[in-house]
Image (cartoon, rainbow, N blue to C red; front, side, top):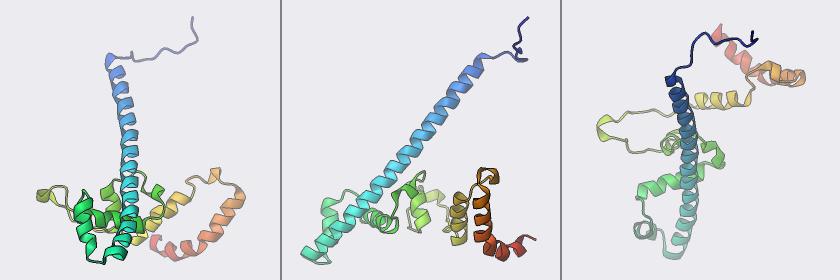
Length: 172
């Protein structure tokens, strides 16, 4: 007699297909995140180059020449150039853009974009500053206390005590 436990349910042919599709979804999702990041980095780098070029054009030909330069040399719209330049001027660390589409990045920065489809435009308000700070803070704090040394736990308690005291009344 075998010591192995028999599975109560036989494996169906659809289970193989389900697992194949799951693996494909995971792979494509990872590729999509990587592609989004590459797009954001490209826009950020283009923005840096546009900022430098604008400075050069204004210095060489005057402020009025920038729009003419854009029309002749930039394949995108002037509005796209403005967005790229704003992205470059606002974001110092391009790794912060990981996992976000350009639309999401622009939304976080408060940069206006055209709706995807004019018939179904949704008005989205910028994320409140306190919500953004909360997400950033939560990313820095370990989720489990058992993964943090007792010394670090004491340091976290000491550092977060003023915040806890101020917010406590909201949750009681």
